[in-house]
Length: 358
Image 1 (cartoon, rainbow, N blue to C red):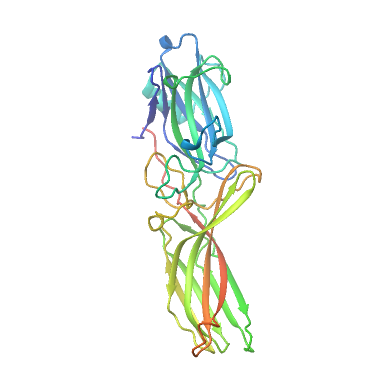
Image 2: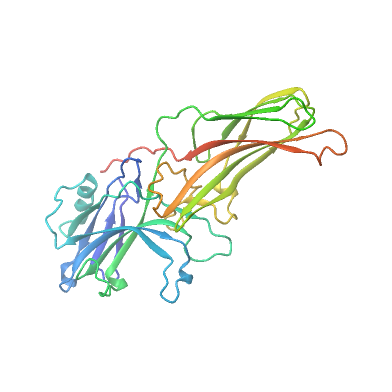
Protein backbone atom coordinates (compact mmCIF):
# COMPACT_ATOMS: atom_id res chain seq x y z
CA UNK A 1 0.00 0.00 0.00
CA UNK A 2 1.42 3.36 -1.05
CA UNK A 3 1.74 5.96 1.71
CA UNK A 4 -0.37 9.10 1.37
CA UNK A 5 0.77 12.50 2.63
CA UNK A 6 -1.90 14.98 3.62
CA UNK A 7 -2.28 18.30 5.40
CA UNK A 8 -5.54 19.95 6.50
CA UNK A 9 -6.12 23.69 6.82
CA UNK A 10 -6.78 25.20 10.24
CA UNK A 11 -10.45 25.75 9.42
CA UNK A 12 -10.85 22.18 8.15
CA UNK A 13 -12.31 23.28 4.80
CA UNK A 14 -9.51 21.96 2.58
CA UNK A 15 -7.08 19.05 2.78
CA UNK A 16 -4.05 18.67 0.53
CA UNK A 17 -3.11 15.15 -0.62
CA UNK A 18 0.09 13.93 -2.27
CA UNK A 19 1.02 10.34 -3.09
CA UNK A 20 4.74 11.08 -2.74
CA UNK A 21 7.06 13.92 -1.84
CA UNK A 22 10.09 13.15 -4.02
CA UNK A 23 9.87 14.03 -7.70
CA UNK A 24 12.62 12.98 -10.08
CA UNK A 25 14.51 15.26 -12.44
CA UNK A 26 15.56 13.13 -15.45
CA UNK A 27 17.67 16.04 -16.82
CA UNK A 28 15.63 16.31 -20.02
CA UNK A 29 12.28 16.16 -18.16
CA UNK A 30 10.87 16.31 -14.64
CA UNK A 31 8.16 14.13 -13.13
CA UNK A 32 4.73 15.74 -12.98
CA UNK A 33 3.74 16.92 -9.49
CA UNK A 34 0.22 15.50 -9.20
CA UNK A 35 -2.12 15.48 -6.23
CA UNK A 36 -5.62 16.25 -5.08
CA UNK A 37 -7.50 18.54 -2.70
CA UNK A 38 -10.51 17.62 -0.60
CA UNK A 39 -12.90 20.58 -0.47
CA UNK A 40 -15.82 21.28 1.88
CA UNK A 41 -17.82 23.89 -0.09
CA UNK A 42 -19.92 24.91 2.94
CA UNK A 43 -17.08 26.88 4.50
CA UNK A 44 -15.76 28.73 1.45
CA UNK A 45 -18.05 31.80 1.66
CA UNK A 46 -17.84 32.35 -2.07
CA UNK A 47 -14.09 31.98 -2.24
CA UNK A 48 -12.23 29.66 -4.59
CA UNK A 49 -9.62 27.02 -3.90
CA UNK A 50 -6.20 27.43 -5.50
CA UNK A 51 -3.01 25.39 -5.36
CA UNK A 52 0.47 26.65 -6.10
CA UNK A 53 3.86 25.02 -6.51
CA UNK A 54 6.79 27.27 -5.65
CA UNK A 55 10.54 26.80 -5.91
CA UNK A 56 12.29 29.23 -3.59
CA UNK A 57 15.84 30.09 -2.63
CA UNK A 58 16.35 30.85 1.04
CA UNK A 59 19.52 32.75 1.88
CA UNK A 60 18.78 33.79 5.44
CA UNK A 61 17.05 32.63 8.60
CA UNK A 62 13.51 33.49 9.63
CA UNK A 63 14.78 35.56 12.52
CA UNK A 64 16.57 37.84 10.04
CA UNK A 65 13.35 38.70 8.20
CA UNK A 66 12.92 42.14 9.77
CA UNK A 67 11.71 45.53 8.58
CA UNK A 68 9.78 43.89 5.74
CA UNK A 69 12.92 42.37 4.21
CA UNK A 70 12.48 38.77 3.15
CA UNK A 71 15.43 36.42 2.85
CA UNK A 72 13.40 34.03 0.71
CA UNK A 73 13.03 34.61 -3.01
CA UNK A 74 10.73 32.73 -5.35
CA UNK A 75 12.66 31.28 -8.28
CA UNK A 76 9.57 29.85 -10.00
CA UNK A 77 5.89 29.69 -9.07
CA UNK A 78 2.76 28.35 -10.77
CA UNK A 79 -0.88 28.48 -9.64
CA UNK A 80 -3.98 26.51 -10.65
CA UNK A 81 -7.64 26.75 -9.62
CA UNK A 82 -9.05 23.45 -8.35
CA UNK A 83 -12.49 24.55 -7.08
CA UNK A 84 -14.82 25.34 -8.67
CA UNK A 85 -13.28 23.12 -11.36
CA UNK A 86 -12.45 24.96 -14.57
CA UNK A 87 -12.95 21.95 -16.84
CA UNK A 88 -9.35 22.02 -18.06
CA UNK A 89 -7.01 19.01 -17.99
CA UNK A 90 -9.75 16.45 -17.29
CA UNK A 91 -7.37 13.51 -17.86
CA UNK A 92 -6.18 12.05 -14.56
CA UNK A 93 -2.86 10.41 -13.76
CA UNK A 94 -2.77 6.99 -12.04
CA UNK A 95 -1.66 8.77 -8.84
CA UNK A 96 -4.66 11.11 -8.98
CA UNK A 97 -7.03 8.21 -9.60
CA UNK A 98 -5.53 6.51 -6.54
CA UNK A 99 -5.93 9.62 -4.36
CA UNK A 100 -9.45 10.47 -5.55
CA UNK A 101 -10.56 6.92 -4.79
CA UNK A 102 -9.46 7.51 -1.18
CA UNK A 103 -10.88 11.02 -0.89
CA UNK A 104 -14.29 10.44 -2.43
CA UNK A 105 -16.70 12.89 -4.11
CA UNK A 106 -15.12 15.99 -2.52
CA UNK A 107 -11.75 15.39 -4.20
CA UNK A 108 -10.41 17.58 -6.98
CA UNK A 109 -7.13 16.87 -8.84
CA UNK A 110 -4.28 19.24 -9.73
CA UNK A 111 -0.95 18.87 -11.48
CA UNK A 112 2.16 20.91 -12.24
CA UNK A 113 4.92 20.48 -14.79
CA UNK A 114 8.21 21.90 -13.54
CA UNK A 115 10.73 23.20 -16.09
CA UNK A 116 14.02 21.33 -16.45
CA UNK A 117 16.24 24.28 -15.50
CA UNK A 118 15.16 24.53 -11.86
CA UNK A 119 17.76 23.55 -9.26
CA UNK A 120 17.33 20.41 -7.17
CA UNK A 121 16.43 20.46 -3.48
CA UNK A 122 19.59 21.16 -1.51
CA UNK A 123 20.46 23.02 1.67
CA UNK A 124 23.64 24.23 3.35
CA UNK A 125 24.24 22.56 6.68
CA UNK A 126 23.98 25.15 9.50
CA UNK A 127 26.55 25.44 12.24
CA UNK A 128 25.94 23.99 15.72
CA UNK A 129 24.76 27.38 17.05
CA UNK A 130 22.73 28.49 14.02
CA UNK A 131 18.94 28.74 14.32
CA UNK A 132 16.10 28.97 11.82
CA UNK A 133 15.78 27.33 8.44
CA UNK A 134 18.94 26.55 6.54
CA UNK A 135 20.02 28.38 3.42
CA UNK A 136 19.05 26.43 0.32
CA UNK A 137 16.53 25.57 -2.36
CA UNK A 138 13.15 24.18 -1.39
CA UNK A 139 9.85 23.32 -3.08
CA UNK A 140 6.41 23.87 -1.55
CA UNK A 141 2.91 22.83 -2.59
CA UNK A 142 0.24 25.00 -0.96
CA UNK A 143 -3.56 24.93 -1.17
CA UNK A 144 -5.42 28.05 -0.09
CA UNK A 145 -8.77 29.87 -0.12
CA UNK A 146 -8.92 33.20 -1.94
CA UNK A 147 -11.04 35.36 -4.22
CA UNK A 148 -8.20 35.65 -6.75
CA UNK A 149 -5.13 33.45 -7.33
CA UNK A 150 -2.54 36.17 -6.75
CA UNK A 151 -3.95 39.45 -5.49
CA UNK A 152 -1.31 41.26 -3.43
CA UNK A 153 -4.02 43.26 -1.67
CA UNK A 154 -5.94 40.17 -0.54
CA UNK A 155 -5.01 38.90 2.91
CA UNK A 156 -4.95 35.10 3.11
CA UNK A 157 -5.07 33.90 6.68
CA UNK A 158 -3.01 30.97 7.86
CA UNK A 159 -6.14 29.00 8.82
CA UNK A 160 -7.20 29.12 5.14
CA UNK A 161 -4.04 27.39 3.90
CA UNK A 162 -2.35 23.99 4.04
CA UNK A 163 1.05 23.12 2.66
CA UNK A 164 3.45 20.23 2.08
CA UNK A 165 7.15 20.45 1.27
CA UNK A 166 8.38 18.30 -1.61
CA UNK A 167 11.79 17.58 -3.10
CA UNK A 168 13.12 17.68 -6.64
CA UNK A 169 15.85 15.04 -6.84
CA UNK A 170 18.12 13.33 -9.34
CA UNK A 171 19.13 9.67 -9.37
CA UNK A 172 22.29 8.20 -10.81
CA UNK A 173 22.06 7.13 -14.47
CA UNK A 174 21.72 3.39 -14.96
CA UNK A 175 24.78 3.15 -17.22
CA UNK A 176 28.05 3.57 -15.32
CA UNK A 177 31.00 4.46 -17.53
CA UNK A 178 34.67 3.87 -16.74
CA UNK A 179 36.11 6.28 -14.21
CA UNK A 180 38.26 9.33 -15.00
CA UNK A 181 42.06 9.31 -15.10
CA UNK A 182 44.55 12.14 -14.62
CA UNK A 183 48.30 12.41 -14.43
CA UNK A 184 51.00 14.97 -13.77
CA UNK A 185 54.75 15.09 -14.23
CA UNK A 186 56.62 17.43 -11.90
CA UNK A 187 60.21 18.51 -12.22
CA UNK A 188 62.24 19.70 -9.22
CA UNK A 189 65.30 21.85 -8.89
CA UNK A 190 68.50 19.94 -8.26
CA UNK A 191 67.03 16.88 -9.95
CA UNK A 192 67.43 15.85 -13.58
CA UNK A 193 64.35 13.65 -13.66
CA UNK A 194 60.73 14.14 -12.46
CA UNK A 195 58.07 12.47 -10.32
CA UNK A 196 55.22 11.04 -12.35
CA UNK A 197 51.85 10.70 -10.60
CA UNK A 198 48.79 9.05 -12.11
CA UNK A 199 45.40 8.61 -10.40
CA UNK A 200 42.20 6.98 -11.61
CA UNK A 201 38.78 5.83 -10.38
CA UNK A 202 37.26 2.43 -11.12
CA UNK A 203 33.97 3.95 -12.32
CA UNK A 204 32.38 7.29 -13.13
CA UNK A 205 29.56 7.28 -10.54
CA UNK A 206 29.68 6.32 -6.87
CA UNK A 207 26.68 6.07 -4.55
CA UNK A 208 26.35 7.81 -1.20
CA UNK A 209 27.96 5.65 1.50
CA UNK A 210 29.89 3.60 -1.04
CA UNK A 211 33.62 3.08 -0.65
CA UNK A 212 35.60 4.97 -3.29
CA UNK A 213 38.69 3.25 -4.66
CA UNK A 214 41.43 5.54 -5.93
CA UNK A 215 44.16 3.85 -7.98
CA UNK A 216 47.53 5.59 -7.66
CA UNK A 217 50.68 5.04 -9.71
CA UNK A 218 53.93 6.81 -8.76
CA UNK A 219 57.20 6.76 -10.64
CA UNK A 220 59.78 8.62 -8.56
CA UNK A 221 62.89 9.25 -10.65
CA UNK A 222 64.13 12.13 -8.47
CA UNK A 223 66.52 12.23 -5.54
CA UNK A 224 63.57 12.99 -3.24
CA UNK A 225 61.55 10.56 -1.10
CA UNK A 226 57.73 10.46 -1.08
CA UNK A 227 56.92 10.17 2.62
CA UNK A 228 53.19 10.73 2.70
CA UNK A 229 50.18 10.29 0.39
CA UNK A 230 46.96 12.18 1.14
CA UNK A 231 43.72 11.30 -0.64
CA UNK A 232 40.69 13.53 -0.14
CA UNK A 233 37.20 14.16 -1.48
CA UNK A 234 36.20 17.81 -1.78
CA UNK A 235 32.70 19.18 -2.26
CA UNK A 236 32.33 22.27 -4.43
CA UNK A 237 29.16 24.29 -3.89
CA UNK A 238 28.32 27.11 -6.30
CA UNK A 239 25.73 29.46 -4.82
CA UNK A 240 24.19 31.26 -7.78
CA UNK A 241 22.48 34.39 -6.49
CA UNK A 242 23.51 37.85 -7.60
CA UNK A 243 26.92 36.45 -8.47
CA UNK A 244 28.28 32.94 -8.51
CA UNK A 245 30.38 32.09 -5.45
CA UNK A 246 31.95 28.65 -5.10
CA UNK A 247 32.81 27.16 -1.71
CA UNK A 248 35.12 24.17 -1.38
CA UNK A 249 34.86 21.86 1.64
CA UNK A 250 36.83 18.68 2.29
CA UNK A 251 34.26 16.02 3.24
CA UNK A 252 36.73 13.13 3.58
CA UNK A 253 40.52 13.07 3.99
CA UNK A 254 42.77 10.06 4.55
CA UNK A 255 46.55 10.11 5.04
CA UNK A 256 48.66 7.07 4.13
CA UNK A 257 52.25 6.72 5.34
CA UNK A 258 53.51 5.10 2.16
CA UNK A 259 57.18 5.63 1.28
CA UNK A 260 58.41 5.81 -2.28
CA UNK A 261 62.18 6.09 -2.31
CA UNK A 262 64.32 7.71 -4.96
CA UNK A 263 64.24 5.80 -8.27
CA UNK A 264 61.33 3.66 -7.07
CA UNK A 265 57.74 3.00 -8.13
CA UNK A 266 54.41 2.42 -6.38
CA UNK A 267 51.18 1.01 -7.80
CA UNK A 268 48.50 0.82 -5.14
CA UNK A 269 44.78 1.44 -4.50
CA UNK A 270 43.49 3.54 -1.62
CA UNK A 271 39.96 3.55 -0.20
CA UNK A 272 37.92 6.30 1.43
CA UNK A 273 34.22 6.86 2.12
CA UNK A 274 32.74 10.39 2.35
CA UNK A 275 29.83 10.43 4.82
CA UNK A 276 27.67 13.22 6.20
CA UNK A 277 27.89 11.58 9.64
CA UNK A 278 31.59 12.52 9.71
CA UNK A 279 30.81 16.14 8.82
CA UNK A 280 27.97 16.98 11.21
CA UNK A 281 29.80 19.97 12.71
CA UNK A 282 30.93 21.52 9.43
CA UNK A 283 28.98 24.63 8.59
CA UNK A 284 28.18 25.14 4.91
CA UNK A 285 28.32 21.50 3.76
CA UNK A 286 25.69 20.94 1.06
CA UNK A 287 23.17 18.22 1.87
CA UNK A 288 20.17 16.87 0.00
CA UNK A 289 17.07 18.85 0.91
CA UNK A 290 15.44 17.73 4.15
CA UNK A 291 11.76 17.04 4.74
CA UNK A 292 11.21 17.88 8.40
CA UNK A 293 14.11 16.42 10.42
CA UNK A 294 14.54 13.13 8.62
CA UNK A 295 18.03 11.84 8.01
CA UNK A 296 19.69 12.86 4.77
CA UNK A 297 23.13 12.62 3.20
CA UNK A 298 25.65 14.71 1.34
CA UNK A 299 24.13 16.56 -1.61
CA UNK A 300 24.25 14.69 -4.88
CA UNK A 301 26.23 15.91 -7.85
CA UNK A 302 24.13 18.28 -9.95
CA UNK A 303 23.77 16.70 -13.39
CA UNK A 304 21.93 19.57 -15.08
CA UNK A 305 23.09 23.07 -14.24
CA UNK A 306 20.37 25.08 -15.99
CA UNK A 307 20.81 28.67 -17.07
CA UNK A 308 23.62 30.63 -15.48
CA UNK A 309 21.28 33.34 -14.24
CA UNK A 310 19.06 30.80 -12.48
CA UNK A 311 19.29 31.22 -8.72
CA UNK A 312 20.10 28.10 -6.80
CA UNK A 313 22.85 25.80 -5.64
CA UNK A 314 25.04 23.65 -7.91
CA UNK A 315 27.07 20.83 -6.32
CA UNK A 316 30.08 18.93 -7.67
CA UNK A 317 32.89 16.81 -6.21
CA UNK A 318 36.52 16.06 -6.91
CA UNK A 319 39.10 13.58 -5.63
CA UNK A 320 42.50 15.05 -4.83
CA UNK A 321 45.69 12.98 -4.50
CA UNK A 322 48.65 14.77 -2.93
CA UNK A 323 52.21 13.52 -2.50
CA UNK A 324 54.63 15.03 0.02
CA UNK A 325 58.14 14.61 -1.39
CA UNK A 326 61.19 15.73 0.58
CA UNK A 327 64.95 15.45 0.43
CA UNK A 328 66.84 13.42 2.98
CA UNK A 329 68.77 14.84 5.92
CA UNK A 330 67.87 17.36 8.60
CA UNK A 331 66.55 19.89 6.10
CA UNK A 332 64.34 17.40 4.30
CA UNK A 333 61.13 18.61 5.89
CA UNK A 334 61.91 22.24 5.13
CA UNK A 335 62.49 21.58 1.47
CA UNK A 336 59.43 19.38 0.98
CA UNK A 337 57.36 19.72 -2.18
CA UNK A 338 53.79 18.76 -3.10
CA UNK A 339 52.71 16.87 -6.17
CA UNK A 340 48.94 17.02 -6.67
CA UNK A 341 46.46 15.63 -9.17
CA UNK A 342 42.65 16.02 -9.22
CA UNK A 343 39.84 13.85 -10.57
CA UNK A 344 36.14 14.71 -11.08
CA UNK A 345 33.82 12.58 -8.94
CA UNK A 346 30.11 12.00 -9.42
CA UNK A 347 28.39 11.14 -6.13
CA UNK A 348 24.69 10.26 -6.35
CA UNK A 349 21.80 8.12 -5.12
CA UNK A 350 20.83 4.95 -7.02
CA UNK A 351 17.37 4.84 -8.52
CA UNK A 352 15.01 2.98 -6.15
CA UNK A 353 12.61 0.27 -7.20
CA UNK A 354 9.23 1.37 -8.51
CA UNK A 355 6.33 1.49 -6.04
CA UNK A 356 3.03 0.12 -7.28
CA UNK A 357 -0.29 1.72 -6.39
CA UNK A 358 -2.93 -0.48 -4.79
